[in-house]
Length: 360
Ligand SMILES: Cc1ncc(COP(=O)(O)O)c(C=O)c1O
Image (cartoon, rainbow, N blue to C red; front, side):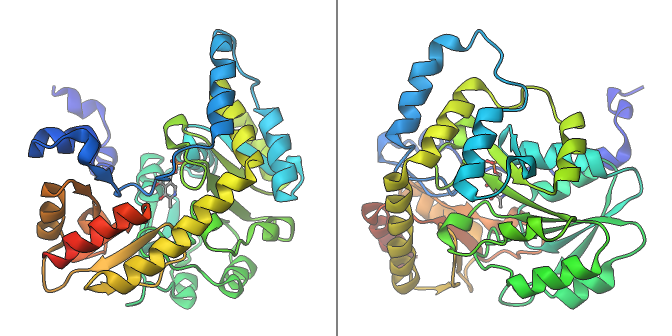
């Protein structure tokens, strides 16, 4: 018997998660100096973490022989103040928002359930749902990546347990209007998950709807604006009834002590948050105006570039040789083969990106 027979066919059929390329692998493959490479393929914060967060990590390094609090209560309390939402509606999560998704989907989904995912979008919803036995119903977004709410409503069946909306959407950068989210919440009996990984760059959040609707979960992360991707910290805003059930199945101690302390420090550093938002707003306008291809309007810290008639993989290769890592969206289901996602960098980095696109 092949050992693979131990794994169910439904799992073997799941496509692998494709991460953005790393500096190390790019340096090695193209014979480049790692210091000359700019990494704009994973939507990280090029300004790095807040100094306050670094200090909190250092100060707590000597305490990592102790387990952190099981429910990350101090961080939840700090988030409650930061968001203006009761602590009974907030769960801290690790590793990252991916951990939140994993715990939540494991709680909600049973074999044979369905979930609906408008595509193209972030791929981990599909992976986590399928890993837990769900069948996925994909609904194609329109040509500007808008979500067709009526098409989603039509796709709902008696087996539909969850719908995933990403706002701003990765990789397109557009948001789902609140009116559409309300319409969906009104008509859907299952859980609507709204991923707000990039919301700080968008100036509009639907987080307060959690206090109005008892079937909405909003996912957030410290990986983007807070520059803490390496710590793997996220959180969910959800109805109090669901938090109680979520906490029963969540992996114990899933937020590490350094992550917990750094998270509290990061949300207190308003200057770092504002500087990061300013940089992104200016940078995405510059990229939008200067990249000599179609660039979609974005509310996130990245822009989506359509390099037609060229192939995204060929253009990414040209940029990689120049030491610029961007994201070929070929692995995003339904994205086609001409889309490239570029994280907004510092002005110096953005200028290098524009220059490289001009050479295509
Ligand atoms: C839309 C979206 N949601 C969630 C995540 C995962 O976030 P985390 O790093 O907190 O797991 C990402 C990461 O790129 C993302 O783009």
